[in-house]
Length: 237
Image 1 (cartoon, rainbow, N blue to C red):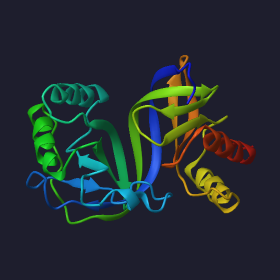
Image 2: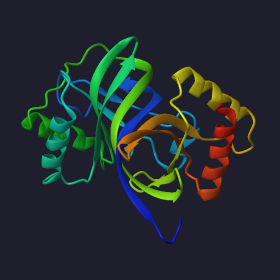
Image 3: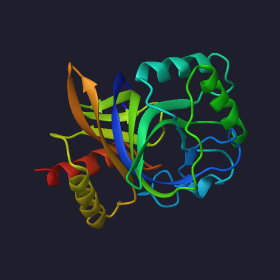
Image 4: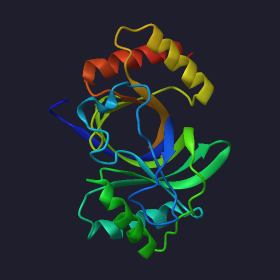
């Protein structure tokens, strides 16, 4: 990390793939909640230092309908005034089995026992949840609308100050999901330090859009992020 930090607040999107399962316990009756048991599928051993039953890591509260970003942001802001944990919430969509669900992605709860209380908080703010269908389990494409708190370490290269072990770098243009997967696969097969998870997205800056790649690795540092950036940029023509 640099000593003279340039801290940036940005809004943007992330697109990623995760395997999700339906939760049946610790939630409000007849509501639909999905959990990512392995939230960074490209990095194996995510739970090596964290017992998988200790606390929820990535939850997706499935909504009855589409709510605006303002509605979800205001509801989250109001809940945080009294909720005991400084959780993180982001609006988004989950596509699984050719069905799209509107969701609130939740991170940083202290225990599974807080899920129902958080759901009730959103209900009190007028946010309703979809009724639970049959159990769903499988790979999903997830799109999140996110606020980022970033430290810029070089032009277009960032560390996330809210999410530990996350780094980002800008790319010259928007990649299709298929091209992104192909480049990521080739990067993993041709690099000695290839244990990482990646996602694509964009941030809004200077009245425009900058396309980005997000890298997750619990041992990420400046050199690692700059090296993996070079590997991607060499493959993006």
